[in-house]
Image 1 (spheres, rainbow, N blue to C red):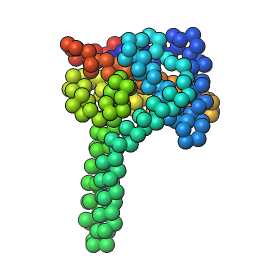
Image 2: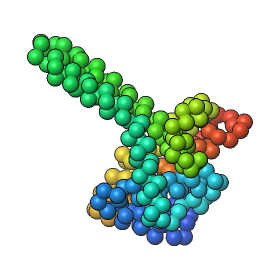
Image 3: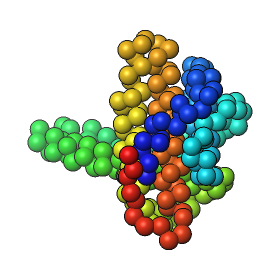
Length: 220
């Protein structure tokens, strides 16, 4: 996994500012904006999957990016649905026993919270691989081909852990940095973070699907 390239490839494109600015502005569109930006980022992941590691930054394609981003959001929702259901059932049970005594609801609430947190992390991790398989294969059903997804995880588990780390790093640290430059800076850094994260997805997918691949190596 080449972490350095994921952060630097954007600036190798002579039209990088234009290519970042347009999806950033689209992200401001109510309801559909985030889908467009995510779909645009996944096009970068697709370009990496196809071997364009150095120059995968895509142009904005409004309709195609919107559709791709929407399907990715649906995949994420479906993968997180078990956690939502368990959380709902748990909340109902917590309310049901809240009048019994003071100790039991507290213990139950703590255990439930830990379970939901672990489950949410696991399901989010799985959804990343599922979305990558969807993008790589170009088929919505590929996101639910669990045999392929578990094979990808088994083949290069560390790569996907690095993608998860990259997601946390870019979305929780890099993206908010734009707030220092006020509103415009915030949407630009968020879109840049999407581009970085998408490049990592493409790299991990390649690591997981190439035959005879050895364990992941982090390059500076």
